[in-house]
Each structure stands twice: as C-alpha cells, then as structure tokens.
Image: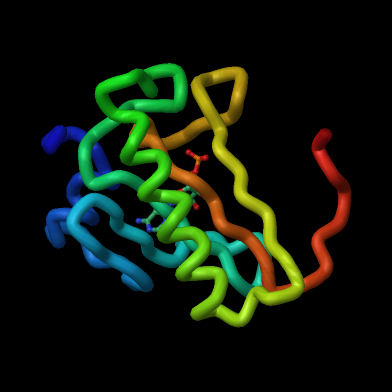
Length: 114
Ligand code: AMP
C-alpha cells in the first residue's frame, strides 16, 4: 500500500467508495463523476502507478483486472457492449496515479477516440 495514494486508501477502506467487486487481487468501485450510466473503476489492489509500470512481474494482475471487467460487465447488464479506458501519465490525462481501468457503458457510446 502507498499511504499517499487515494485509491490505496479506498481499497483499504480508509476512504469510502461504492464497491461493486472485490477479490484477492482486484478492487472495483463506482466513479464519483460518472460519464455514463455505468462507470466503474477496476484496479489491482497492488499499487502500480500507471500502465508504463506494467512488467513481467505484475502483468498477471492486469489479466485479473480484465477477468473482473467481464464479470462486472455481465453483472451490470452490459450485454450490448462497453468501453474500457486507461489513461496513463500526464499526457494521457491520468489524475490518480494508481493503475485503473474505466469500465463505461449502459448507453450507446459516442465518439471513438481511435
Ligand atoms: P483518471 O483521470 O484516469 O486518473 O481517473 C481517475 C478517476 O477517479 C476520475 O474519473 C475521477 O472521477 C475518479 N475519482 C476520483 N476520486 C474518486 C473517489 N473518491 N471515488 C470514486 N472515484 C473517484
């Protein structure tokens, strides 16, 4: 745990969140500023600052996050589809430096970035 990290504090229960999923390695909660009817942040419990820090030692946790994404999407009724976004670093628009994936859906999403 990084004691200066907002999301580590949420995972630890020091700051409240609306949890939607938890297992041994992964935690997920609703974004405080949702951009769609479903907007869930899915993250590894282990503090990894951003996607540029993913390596052979921790990449399995990314797979675990995506296993959770599939489960949450099903539980949230996103059979028609959804979008997963990761912002990395300053130019990528990341505001909280704990690796997380935005799971967004619940309506027809517009404007593809790529
Ligand atoms: P990013 O800009 O990709 O780093 O995403 C950070 C996200 O965390 C933003 O969408 C914020 O709305 C969200 N966020 C920040 N603080 C909280 C909080 N206390 N609870 C839930 N979501 C939060």
